[in-house]
Image (cartoon, rainbow, N blue to C red):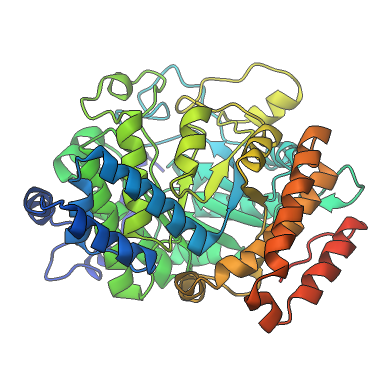
Amino acid sequence: MDTKSWIDQVIKQDQIDKYLINGKDFINENEIHNKLNTNKDCSKEKVRAILDKSLAVERLSFDETATLLNVTDEDMWEEMYEVAAEVKRRVYDNRIVFFAPLYCGNLCVNSCRYCGFRKENAGEERKVLTAEEIRRETDYILSQGHKRVIVVYGEHPKTDAKYIAESMKTVYDVKKKSRSGKNSYIRRININAAPMSIEDLKMLKEVGIGTYQVFQETYHKDTYKSVHPKGLKANYRWRLYSLHRAMDAGIDDVAIGALFGLYDWRFEVMGLLYHTDDLEKQFGIGPHTISFPRLTPASGSQLSIASKYLVNNKNFKKLVTVLRLAVPYTGLIITARENPEVRDEVVKVGCTQLDASTKIGIGAYDKAAHNEKEDKQQFTIGDSRTLDQVVNKLAEMGKITSFCTAGYRCGRTGDKIMNLLEKGTEGKFCKLNAVLTFREYLDDYATEETKKIGEELIKKEFEEINNMEFYKNNKLLSVINDYYKRISEGERDLYV
């Protein structure tokens, strides 16, 4: 099948039209610009009232978010950083969840001007992994200590829904013995892939998809058209409503994101909030996570280094802070695109998920296992630290690494987990599961240095746990102590 025929077959106009309101989508550019231009009363009293709303774990309105984006007083920003950190602590405690990306294919029908995978980039070596190659990639990821992955696919007929479903089955099937002799395996697969039909998404639901992630890249329509001139991705609305279709297919954890550097960062923050709002209006639940990658140099892409909208480190920290305040109960992901110093700094203002030991070439993990040179990549990696190195650094910062996937297997997904997050309850379960999975990691994979600092952190965690009324009232203290003892003696995958 030729590319055009495949694209025509994939896009189903009726699965766009059903979500429109009076024939219009939810991104009202004039309204966004108007709110950014008119909400310039950034008095300390007004800003602090907005911050109080965030502290109550309530989503901010469009006007309130625009007000925060207009703050110019650097002292006020320092207050906002502190409040964002406190919001994160109230909802998610001090834990950071880890994952590894697994790139399965870089064939692509799109012509995205910022991406090394784009169809016209002759310098990119094209490949789609076989089942055996996926097993080897997964084997290496497991050897680092990871328990969850996000599997990434180019937008191409050879990596369609059927391929994705089979590749997910392969990843779930891999078992690898850890240092303690226990079998380790991937407990949750999230995917980043092309927008699909409801029918195809139901197929992925059946094989155990975790979170379905599709980034709009930019919500500004003229910019979107300019940077996506051809291919499946050229259809703005097919992409815009990809997560709506996922919700209708029964996938209750979806993830949004924007590629910062394509257009004005303040507009994109507002676009993410409008996306969140429409999901909540139509399905009663917003995104499970929000991502905010920045443009980094990509193979053969002049735009990736010359865009006039590139976001500096100072503004990057600000946009992450506003997202944490605007959507206090949603996870925030910062990837290894960023360098270690930026990641360590931005984690302080509210990020909840990181990747580490990251390789983004096709087959790159297996090459690393055999000390082979990695091929050209989709974009530039800024943080090449191993998982153990990042875990060690976070432990020094007082943050506990979590490999927990318990909520998904206990049914705490979709609107259930969002309600628990808003009430501050889910974070308390996650605190216990973070301790259990961290103990697993320390015994199975950590260096002696990381194990030493990690065990000191666990002691502090138990001091907090033993003094919290929630655990006493719900009779969880005896459970966590029993599970912790059993894991220390060699059992695995115990959770509450």
